[in-house]
Image 1 (cartoon, rainbow, N blue to C red):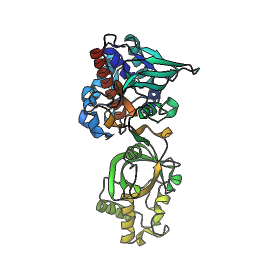
Image 2 (image 1 turned 120 degrees about the vertical axis):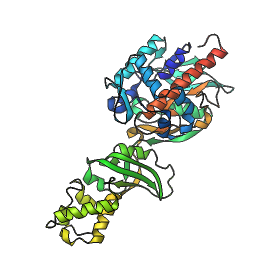
Image 3 (image 1 turned 90 degrees about the horizontal axis):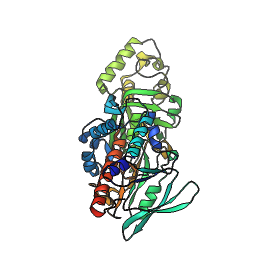
Image 4 (image 1 turned 30 degrees about the vertical axis):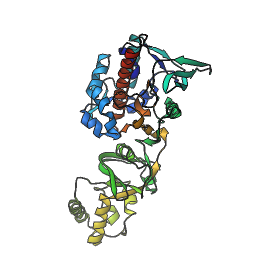
Length: 410
């Protein structure tokens, strides 16, 4: 929709093809139905939070940064607000309102929209795209000629919204390299099954690091959640974006339950708790240090008798307790599937796309935008900003190209 608007604003005749029964189906579920449109921060921050190929986005982000995105939505009738972490949402907190204003702008610009229309292939002759093949809901086929084609079919995340990978197949069939798509911003499964006993436990103000062998790949501070299969929550989703495709050694998650305290400070804190609970058994002395549901599971990793009186816990045993609180490790078995992934990592290689226009280097007059490119970022509005930035740049570039090459501009 954003690409069609950008292209139509250049004066081109635009046909938007959508295989679903309505436009923007994935938008309805973004931000838990509130739609985190962007992140109100400078381009430098957008780039820092882009995980894959940030340099490729210099032109796109400078063409349309987050503040331009906010201005665009205000201009078409959508008030927005900024919340914690510079996350930007519609003031109404309804993702459906984002769709409404985009559809209204499409109508205003005269963009023709065809629903229930599936693109089945590209028409490419002599290295130039000439149009597309389509099939409607009754599987009736049609060939549509065009002077330019823009693919914005998304990745493989949430297939129920229509992201089933056809666009990636079209790109590959026309000679483009694909970086293997994998789930990103996704919960992680762990080998240790301790999560089952802590299912539903949410932790706040903790630190989480992802390691591949001895190499730290990610570290963040915030919230996480134990589930029936492993770990989830904002910190874990962010860590998943850095999970190596081909791990050399084991990937592990290191949880620091007390990131605000050094080992020495935490040891002093534990010692004070022990002194205040000298008549209690070791297992009953940690209520003010750890969540109740975590204590029996956590202590299972320590070689300390649970019934041992606190005043008999040795200095070495206390040091082991402190060390575990600062480095509670889980071995990553792997990510959950695309159906639980916020975004897709991988897609059309950025090496085959011109960063200043989003046009293919392989097929003339073919453009790409959004998640089907090998671009992904952390949570916080960054992935939608990538979508809007690449879409507006692609639409404008495509329109300018048509203006140069044709009078009909269709």
